[in-house]
Length: 501
Image (cartoon, rainbow, N blue to C red; front, side):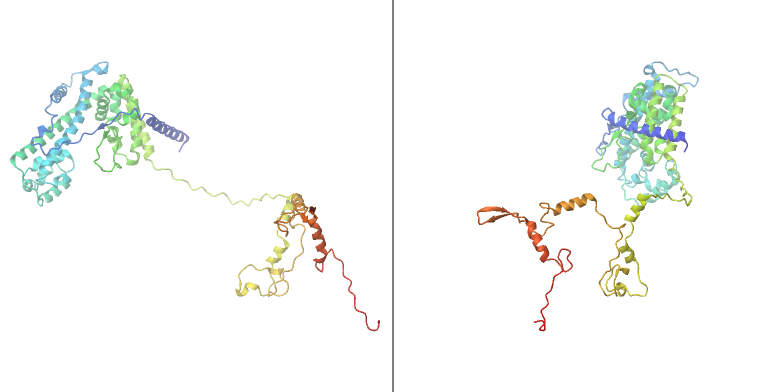
């Protein structure tokens, strides 16, 4: 890795830390996520229009007419965007259609639940075989009550489903335990499937118009995110100007929904997964780096929306530049870590080690060196039987310290070398002398009882101070041994002989 790449990596780490701190500081100002409304109970309804009311509303029909008029416009007509952008009719239509597209998605979910609740009596296994909503309703519309006949026709099924799914459906349809539906109930199901198909066609037309107009309204956002995602962000934020004023941490959670888990675990729930989370550029990446990419993409979205709100860079160069930066950051996140090179060992050069010398060092080595007693213990006589040779007792031998044979317990003391002799410091010597003096001894080191005192009571009704060392001096002559240094030789009187008498 070059020096420039290392510096760039350090700056990226600093940016990520700043982004995390901004998210923590602005937790209170984050846009509230819209709670997902629970789907209605469709079992008590017989007509789909009682549940799905969006297609029959006046606002929906008016917006669809405007959309068709814009799509049928001649290609030679020049489209001019008015300023300010909020007053442009094209811009307002795009914002309204983007909001309507999300309502269409929710309406498709409701219709799917209506069809599933009605059709599960005829073919209950179809829901698990075809999990996608629109494909499921297309298969229901095709099969109807004749699942044994049409379910075996793979040519019809292959027009709307994958070949592998067609084979599974044909096998399962022959063994299902479902019951045939009544004509009225089947007609309501067919009507619901047709309504879902019409909503899907309107949704595709909206996407086509948004793709044509968003490149004029927000070219930099389209270059970065695509027309559909850019239109969804603009609609969710309430316009291009509010999106440009919004911080990146709020753009990251735009479109997030709070799902009612109904008692299930929240380990796999994504509470902050907004519109950017569901983009193709994020979903095609490994799961472990998606959060980082969403943060990066939200930052670049904020930078791309600001020039669009001021009608700058109509060619989309800023959005393309931000997209290149996002792709570069993604490559850095995906690339494997660098392989550590095995560092070679240094050359085994036999350099002369530094050895200290001098009088002080020689004395220290002599003082800390091996004593003569240890040297003799390490020496052994050849041809002599050691004490632990027969495993009678284990332990270290004493070598040449022994006097006589191996069975004797005497140890011959070697000549004490003054160089290796243990010495006491002058401070320790003075301390020992003080302890031997009067009043310095303690009951711990001396043999005198701890209750002994130098004051004695006499019958003369007084106190007498006694020196306790006198008794020690008197007893020293009598208790001395034969080789005492204090006592002299004794004169032994021999008895006189009879001749002398």
